Image 1 (cartoon, rainbow, N blue to C red):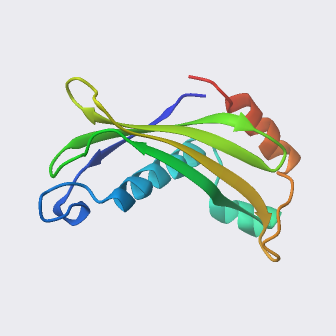
Image 2 (cartoon, rainbow, N blue to C red; image 1 turned 60 degrees about the vertical axis):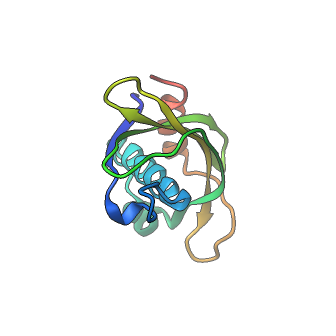
Image 3 (cartoon, rainbow, N blue to C red; image 1 turned 120 degrees about the vertical axis):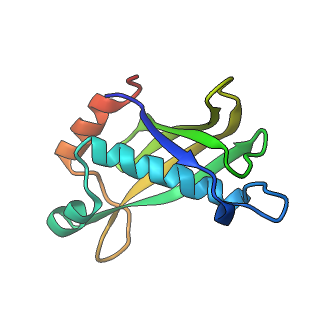
Length: 140
């Protein structure tokens, strides 16, 4: 499956008084890209909770900030599955300034774990979801 690309415009609410994006906003941008990746691959959070009794939760995130994004920048946020196991998967994510040079703004690695919706304890991904995700891993 393809890499998910989410266009994001930087608004005033995303920035400080100098017009620079708050660090926490980048996490919101990449969260949206992961959610859209799941949605575009037929994976719905509500359906997983209601039918399989599981939640997909962020368990770890690493971000490397390269250059600041600024007010009115147009950004491209990508998400793709990089690693997969029976209980978690890892997204590789990138934020670039567009159009133009595609300057790298931020690079992130986000680990998503499967947990039981009632107990909050880790559990294995449902077999079909694992197979679906395995088909997506590392694809461009």
